[in-house]
Length: 115
Image (tube, rainbow, N blue to C red; front, side):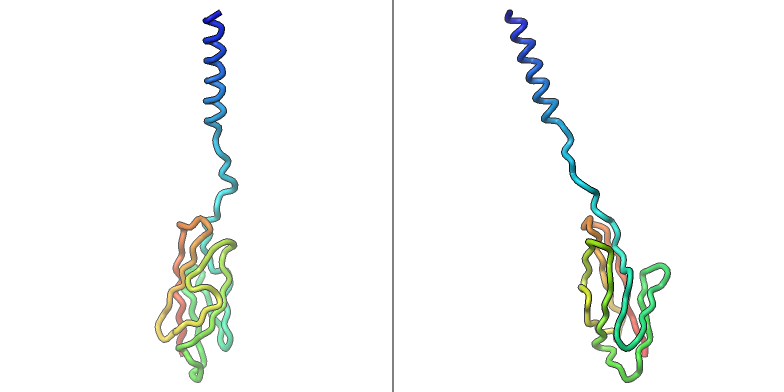
């Protein structure tokens, strides 16, 4: 009888441990895309290179290179610094850093313009 009770308790403990070790469902994987997919500005055209790291354009000599309004679209659920739309001083190249939804994947784009 004691042996039967002992085995029953042992089976219950085993069942509790087995259920407690069930893998937690973490949900869908977070995206690692950190892309600028489109870019525009008023007054001139910006071109993104095929490699995706450089965005450049030529602006009219009468335009203010020190305050260029740029609008860009990034990967779904990603963030950027600066956020779009942004006013950039393009007297020298400026970075836009895109961070993917996973929070660790980043891509830096360099924006520049000439007159």
